[in-house]
Image (cartoon, rainbow, N blue to C red; front, side):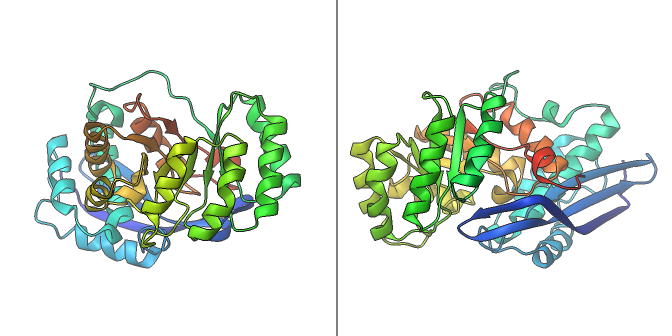
Length: 338
């Protein structure tokens, strides 16, 4: 099958409501979509990336440049016959994380194109040794006051959501009220995580330690910025309190992961397809995490369309030992989907 063209588009996906976290009050997602054409087969393949400056340093513009650059790679499969060509290309293109959303979208579009030609599902190209037929998703609550948190929790409870992640910022009073609302609505056995998106310094983290412990928070995700020098001290504070420390923005590549494993601060790593550079990179990172004996979460970018959400479900379907799975929020969050 000959590939005749690779197109890349900017897409703006408006939200039904403002979703706030420490880095921004998000009202829409600026993503990219890659379209690959095989005229002789009459086929098109699609992939999506979510470039985020505060995660991998990417923007829509830089991701588009990244796609164009990746297409010049000598292993790009312009004549595509076997999935091994896609994996070889993706592995050869692994490098700087500021191309990760571009690589994710391009690899996904190639897999989609081949799957359409062979009348298969993308999941059929993924390893089968960890496959599962059941995936249980959690729910995410935005950084907000009680009046916003309560109705969201009511919806999560109706869907029998048992894992809840709360976005937090620096307003301790607001954070307390949000935790109170979650505890009031959700069942007592609900597994509660807090995600700060790098919004605290060490002193603010210390100020919140008793609060999150008193509400039974099981995981604290990315409380400090990746370059903060105080990760070791914070890890030493949290471990006696049985609060796991999760890396998100701190680990976007295999190089980041190896550093995190060497430093020994983290108990859990958040793997996201767009953040980590697609299936090939994400699977390599998951295998390394398993070998190291740490936990991992299969997460998502805020504002994924149905394209990335479907890919996320495929990754979750071969990750039965993931501690948490998050994603497929597009029907609830987006005004218009893809």
